[in-house]
Length: 376
Image 1 (cartoon, rainbow, N blue to C red):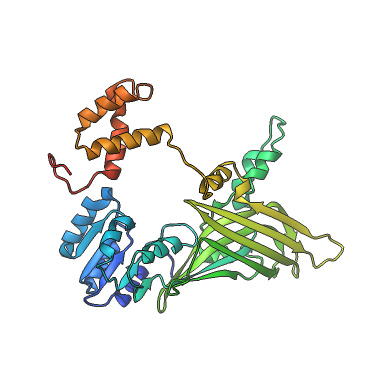
Image 2 (tube, helix red, strand yellow):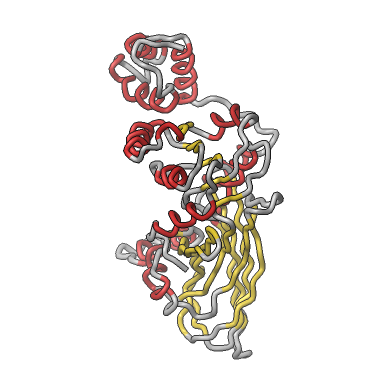
């Protein structure tokens, strides 16, 4: 495996899978580097999804590398959708968005807008791995604020909430191997070459046997990502703590049930751990945990995702709708500031108070290519 920080492996994978004369959909997020490499590999056209704020830098990059005329910038997959019916994409390139599965929904959403499945997708597949680890530092990240109880306050409920949350866990594989108490296991494989691939829900049951005695603190989850033949990397991503550390001995058995649900922009993790000790005089331990229990936000989010839910506009939504309407009418920023102050006086007592809101909305929704004075 090659470490993620070695960007050369991604570049080499692009060079291997992009064919001369091909059309490439680059899912962006990397400042245009993959688009340039694809052009150097012979791509005739690259459609690169980049946020408009990044367009000037991407244009400079592609111009400096003499491929600007072959790179078409779009701000989203929806913006590309209108062109997709006439575009035969040969290759899809995805940069790592940082969620789990590491690439999953980014690629799936892209392939859905294409008229035909591309011949090559990077990455090709991804294996979600897990291990039981002993890491007092990772565990302290969740509990030390609640264990330091100098004032005698009952902090147990808050501590339990913290232990139903997940945290980032990034450590070099050579260091991580010293923390593992059992051999790592694969609990899910995502094959991006399969038309039936779906990552909205990933679940599995896994059995592990403890090989090295130690104090177990929880699970770590990471991805083994295959980019192309012989090119891969691994990335340690999250730590799932247990409700309490467990002293584990060689031969103890762990029954693990994991589930990951993508709900909107939030990942909901569920993990159940049952420890059966080799010493039969010790009763088993079991923990049932979920990020759903870590705060109230996921419950509200789940209700909003139900098909019969009727959403209503918040104050921010009403303001955004008004700004978008005025943008469609071709009004100037000065005019919009005055109107917002008049129509939303509690939010914008003075017209100048609306400046930041206008700046944010216009940078997000205005056409990046429109010159000063042009409308429509």
